[in-house]
Image (cartoon, rainbow, N blue to C red; front, side, top):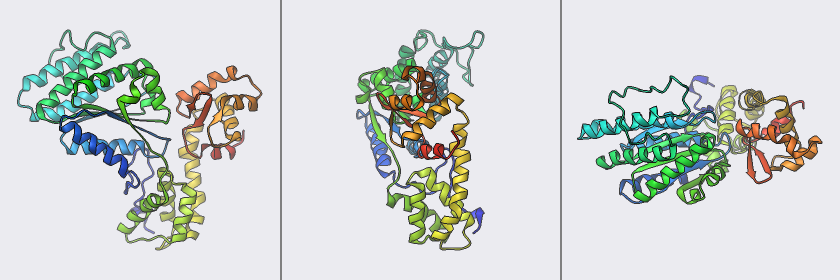
Length: 393
């Protein structure tokens, strides 16, 4: 069939043609937007899940929803080696720029931009000689507001001032943070404290984060009240109806159908994971001769889809690991696909658990595994154990 008309989109953060199975989360966020718009107290929101379940896609969809309501929006992607001070400053600068043309008091905007500039420039972690930061902000930096150097104090003051600008317009501001589990520990604490202040004052600024399954425990370890501070949404694989819809709806728009047997085979291969659904669907389309796409087409195309996943989805992550880290992951995979005990991994490698802590901690930092609960670890990527068992140890 014509590959140019292929509707499927397996890509990092790339929205699929049919966002199936996420109605509950979209409705939850719609309620958050509506409540904030009406001045009602509302929690910020955190979306968690494994790699490939569509967290970034959902985050981007939330951002579009906020923009449609004329909110100010900004987005960052957290990095474990970077403070959030400057990325947050850049994101809020963008958000306020979206609101500025509608604000009737330009001096209020200038006043906030002065605070924003002071916040960004007061970065204790910045290298000497690089403190000057001015992304198109022509106003002078303010003094005495959000410039103490203590991120918890500064971020709280910045959020309060940004929320005040949004209040003037009767809208809100949404800050979106992808890979939120990579926010540095002191910065997580500051972020929670700032959100806590907003929840008490009712300011119309919300933080919407997305991260791996252990993100709630990262937040909880930082501030004990974080479990009450955020609305948590755990997303996982699609059920059968949603997975079928993700395949059928885009194909129907191109006049193409699947047989029931083909859908059965695709669900078994993709296991309901959204990224895999798109990956198998795309290759099946390219290799099928005509409509309807049959189970035979799936059998022929599956090896090519699996090869692409082995190189791009699994292999690229595997290559980031050191030999010692690969040994650790192979030991995990040999035990099974469910969360495994760190003691069992150590026993499988014939080592003391304490001697394996550096490898484990490095794998967690690289986002390849996560701590499911105390003493248990699991892969962040679905089917990664199966992939590892196919590789030479």
